[in-house]
Length: 388
Image (cartoon, rainbow, N blue to C red; front, side):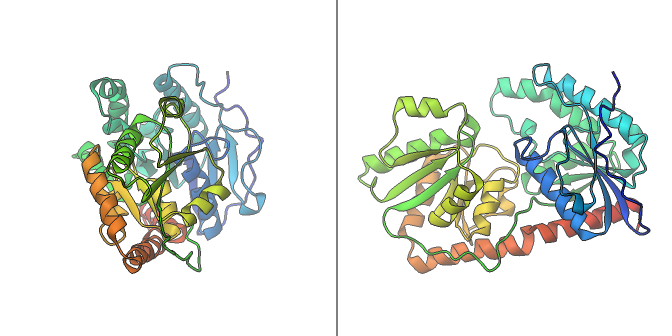
């Protein structure tokens, strides 16, 4: 079977002097594929194209055109990963198909989302940027998970040491990647995730009673839902159940479990919500709470910050880049007592103090995490690869 399944979706955009030829390699693009990296692929491509400073090609596995033709993005379709087969082997085969296409292209810069540029990496390393995103394989919780993710850690180390640059989202993730790259000549650079920041600012108006705390995420063990439920139940038992209401948006493997097991009376399950409803929930809540056990740089935290919400989140991954005492609270992962204390502190705050936290979230998002600022950092990195 041919490695390149379909190049008919490629747009013939003439080269322009001075523009950097960038190839973005991804195994999925939102909304055809769901996930933080897939959403990042779409938004980064669109924002890069709008700069007018790059000639962009996106390699992806989806049929049909994904991007507005007016953006001038070349699209090359690669046959998709077979999700019914062994995943790591499928990633290798997908990277083989990507490598076959890359050999036929003129590229100043190759940006690999995850493991897309693995096979034949030695041919592309001098112009290759690896973006591994959340590094979940290095944050596995139990022995079983660590054993399962061990091959992924080996592969990533192999790739990092053969790339020109590796992107870290910051925080605890940078140290992980620097250890992988040590002695190889590869350079780790910090470029955060990004968010569309509404201007003018979405005002934060703290509500009354009950305090409304919003959780957004997948109903899975790593998101710390058991910690959140324990805190909710403790508030009920202490006679404070009517003071704090937890609203949980999302679905996943544990949703049926919590429905069947019964919930504390101050917890409401909202199910999976679309973007319009999600953004409404952000603006209606008093704070976002995310007691996650591991993360990269959570998109939901950025989205809530962009809408002027205070944040209570576990200190994992790159969350310390987003949140501190000026806009919320960082709590140790897996610590129900610390989460309870943070919520009680927030409950005791006056209206003006909560409003200051929310305003700091918005100001920080606009200054550091807006897509325009982050896209500029990517273009600067591309220029470093090109030697400008």
